Length: 406
Image (cartoon, rainbow, N blue to C red; front, side):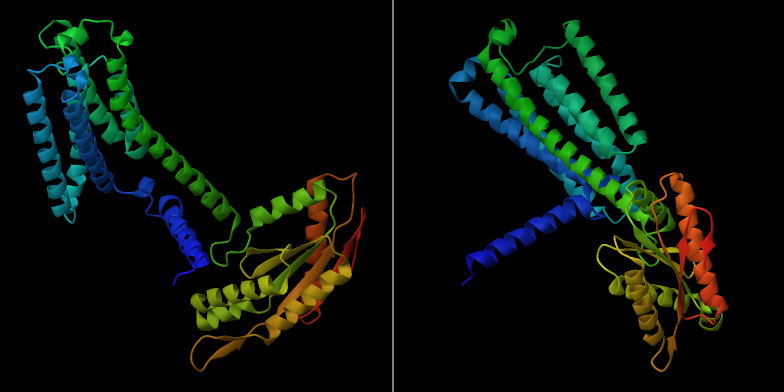
């Protein structure tokens, strides 16, 4: 039997899967094609029509029947059934044509227009000027602007707006009956003082309001998630997934401003150009990714590992001393030297790296950028000495306010 703990674990896994699909996956609603959004719109429209019909049917067979026009009941029942059938057929045809690129592009325009016409017709039956229709139309248009491309929603909105104006003019001139769904007793009364009318507006509008709220929250959450991803991508090197130069600069500036001590370690792979020349850039990329993994494994969780570009990497070790930094740099050097990187079933290559270590000092009278430049220069000079003295070694440098001493 499944234990309670297993049930909870499965529920958590399901919630995580749903969260991933809704917020993190590239298949989230905001990234759907216009066609797929249209399919969702048709399903929503179908549910809306069924819900409206059920409300109309139950109301007509209740004590509130006096507020409905009995002569309009057969007409509204027929038109609603036709709308349900037409929407269902539209949905089936769209699904049948889902693999046709031309049909998908055309339906991307037609489905929002069709949905808008359904909403407007339903709105006309309860009063084109009513709060439910006005607020519902605004909500739907706002969702459309968020979900769809501008050229689609502008064209659809223009057509829908013309129809609304046309219906409003005909209603004002008495050529069309205002709110034919309701009886004369209701339409000629003080609507805002009639509990049934107020409840009707709420019933008709609340589903649109709730769906709009859910859509907006979902879309905003997806946007926030996308922004977080963009922020992370802006901080990471695409090949190695290490922090890039931009993030390293920002991180060091923050440490300097906080007067925190840190070690700055530059390392450069020895003779890396020969790898690209002899084996190709694919192998070179493989080596860079393997080195990145080694550096992450050999440093502490609180340390920052980055790639400045090419074969040059950087380590920022926070809240330590120079001895600890030298130990970590030497550990990284030894691990890189001993690593055998397989590039084929019979071919392995080994790399070495040279390290330059500098330790920050509190220099309050200097600007952040100047302190940062001194630290970079100190590590770079130490790296230069390591290379000049045979490579595959660790050298350190100290910084002062006036000079660098190797």
